[in-house]
Every structure is written in C-alpha cells, then in structure tokens.
Length: 398
Image 1 (cartoon, rainbow, N blue to C red):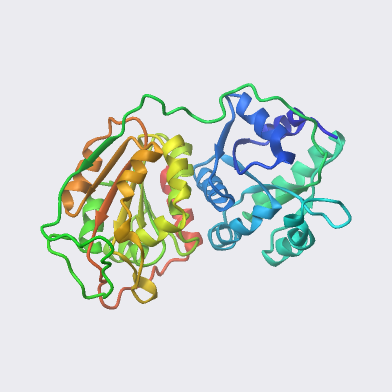
Image 2 (image 1 turned 45 degrees about the vertical axis):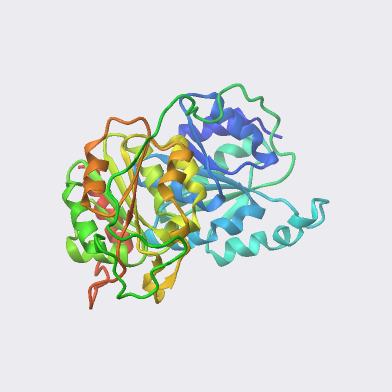
C-alpha cells in the first residue's frame, strides 16, 4: 500500500499539476490530496469522456494533466480517447481503477468490464501497466509513463487495484462556489417569426426570417477573435469545415471527432492559458450530447472562455435529421449552471454583445438560432489534425 502524497508529489516532480476525473472509492485519497493542495488543480467532470477532453485541453495549453476514472466509466471515454487524443496526438496520463477484476468479489455491474478492461486498452492501442502498490515502484512506473507520453504523444494508463492507496482526509473545498454570483441573462434579439414550440427545422433549405447562416455567424466570430491573443475551436462537422473554408488561421482548431467534447476541451485550454481568450463554437447536436459539461463549465470556467452554440435544429452533416433543440432553452440552462453571462438571439447583435462584455465573473455563453444549410462543395481541411494542432501550439507559444 502507498500514500497518496508519495505518488502525487512524484508526479508533481515530473510536471503533473492538473487532474480531471470522475470519482471512484479507490481514487478518493488522490482526489482529496489534490483538492487539499492549492498549488494543484482538480476538475470534477460530469462524465469520464469530458474528463479526458478537459485533460487534453489542459495539455495543449501547456499543463501536464492526469485523467482519473473507474473502469466501469471507461466506456464513456472511448470516443475522446480514440478520436481526440489519438487523432491529434495528445498525451494524457490515465489512472483507471480495476473494478470487477476476475477472481475478486465486486458489484455485479463491474463483472463484464472487469473482464474486458485489459482488452479494451489493447484495442484502443493505449499501453497500460499495474498501478504501483509499493512506494519503491512509484518512481519507475511514472518514469515509464512519462517517457511514453513524451516520445509517443499518446495516452498511457496505470491500472489500479483495490486497497492500493491508504486513506487521505478531505480538508479543502472540493468545488468552486458560485454562491452570490449573478448571471447576466439576456435575450439580445428576437426573430420576427418564431417557431412554435416543438416545431423543428427539418429540411436543409428551410429558413426563418432574421436568422443568420452558419457562414455569416462564423465570419462575425472570426472578426472578433484576432489571431494574436485568442483561440477559436470549432466543433466537429460542418462548423469546423466552414471555419477552415472561410479563413484557415493559425489560432484555429477544427474538431474532427469526439462529438460534444469541444466545450470540455476548450474549458481545459482556457484554464491552462488564462492569458488568452478562448472561444468554442458548438452545435445543438453536440451541446445536447454532452450537456453535463455545461455544469462543469459553469463551476470552473473563467471570463476568458466564450461558448457559442449555433443552433440550426438539425444534425446537418449526417443528413439533417432533426435534433430536439427546438424544445430546449440553452441560455437558461447555461445560466442555471453558473455561467457568468447567458445570451440568446438570432442576429449578429448577440455575438457582438458576447465579446463586448468581458467584465462578467465566469464563462460567457451565447445561444444563436441560425438557419440550416451549408455552402455547396464545402471543403475539408487539407492539413492533418495533428499538424493543425501543432501549428496552434506553436502559435500560442510564440
């Protein structure tokens, strides 16, 4: 058995200062130790996939990050591990508890995942090794992990068994308090003709008076996110492709997978680089898929994070199947989750106000209902995701 202090301090010596995760009883000593130390940072994510994406954002911003989770939640992290960390070559250290290990009594819901955890890591091409159970093994294990992360720029996992870590009491405040902080909630503009509740836009040619196209909205956002001093992250699908087509700038990143994880990635990036203005352009389908991250952003997000959700009511890049966004007030959700600003509207005024008001306490959100449709012949980025990311990292570290 080891002490949490021994491992966390050894990891700190290698530069690991930021942690994300979803709790497991096996992980409690580590989480408590990190929370107790004001020099360390912990993000309590809504799910394991968001924890991985936030850790990836922290890493891109120059902070070494560890994502912690139970293996029963590893399934929630498969998508960002395979289509974000692998696709973009982002090294994240994983500490995963091994519930349901064959031959050890555990709860029935852990039985199958306990059997297949090792195989799952193998299928994802993520190397793993047993978590050190003796303090003499901590240094060598972390050195092996660190060497792989540095050389291969891919995730590496430590698989923890029950009873590995001695208890450690919680003494710090586990979640940032938003008590007493008021959200600026405002409807900036109303459409001249609104949809009836539940009436989704179902056809790519459908329009609504007063609504912008995605291209118009993105051009406005580009104009308000200068190359120097800001980062612009576009969610997967047509958003990233249109950003690339309009203006392929060094401060932009185009998600090509990990649907719904752009906002958690941007949260990590904004926390790692408080000196930069970070904007994430989300979609209604992506926002609905990872809505739990609204609460995480509301609790941890700062004023340098702008979250813009372009809502056309459909999953456009897959054939314009309707989403349920017509029944959702995203701005009210953002306000209830603790964002410092929550705007909604249909015109450029909502975007301009989002960037004009940077004096709020917390992340800023704008829900913009737009018309469906994309330019014909819309190109895909002709630079690989890895090269786009390396270009961004080189740019922000100039």
